[in-house]
Image 1 (cartoon, rainbow, N blue to C red):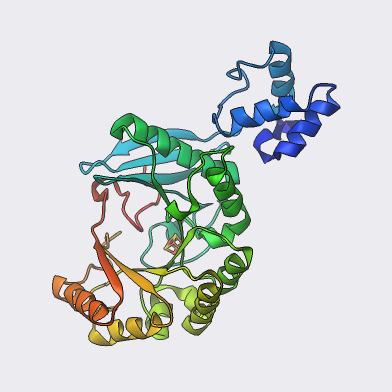
Image 2 (image 1 turned 60 degrees about the vertical axis):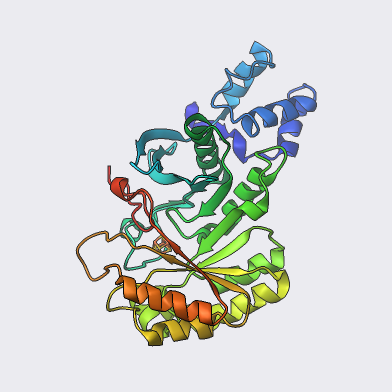
Length: 346
Ligand code: SF4
């Protein structure tokens, strides 16, 4: 019965080796299968050509490979690609390939929907349906790596966990996926090229610091004033800025790793000098970088991109205070692939 078959990629290499021994076969057969599953990203047992037909049939009888399927691929005028990714239980998430002249970045999802409720975000309207498994995260990266090689003639260079979901609410699976992505038995990417972007879950930021992770941290801050942040990111009432700041101080003390803040400036919400002064105060304790992200309205509601003069005020004030700042143009707007727009529209 199909229902009784196990997801083979939930097994560690050791467990696979043990399985083969329990079947009266050699342990190294487990290594071969592990290599097919991860390094070669096999979609079926059928394609594992260095195994005998009997071994492939035996695997087929016991396991499934719950590989993702790219259901629909949309290409933007600016080269951005958005994948609608179908999971084995028919749920759909999205991931995005963002090309620049020198690099390809994959923006991947970590949950179906999201546990949190940021008011400006299209994904928040989907609510969280479930966490993604490590292999479902890994597969999104492999799919984008393949597309990068096919359309841009180069491998994927960077990964950001900034698609659907709050990665720190699915911490264990995100970590397992990153282990595979960075392992020589997986994609062998450097952790320095991976950024986990969180809306700021203090307890989990401290846990990351304790776990000695080597990828980069970005925080979607959007306001350094509690009253305003709670209005736009209601969970801030629970995880206040003071808690977040304390967790980030802990992170910096342990990792000495610069913190990036993602920040959107909205008209009438956080576009005054008082707002930028609060931001300067908030990030003073550690080397910081602020990415000012262009906003993509998800409807005609209260969230609209601020004026260019407000953006200039942010840039000037941050630079005057020695804080690195970049203004990031949004990509893939025409296909709803830009930040905050991922919501399975198709
Ligand atoms: S912005 Fe991120 S954390 Fe907030 S609701 Fe959207 S996906 Fe979730």
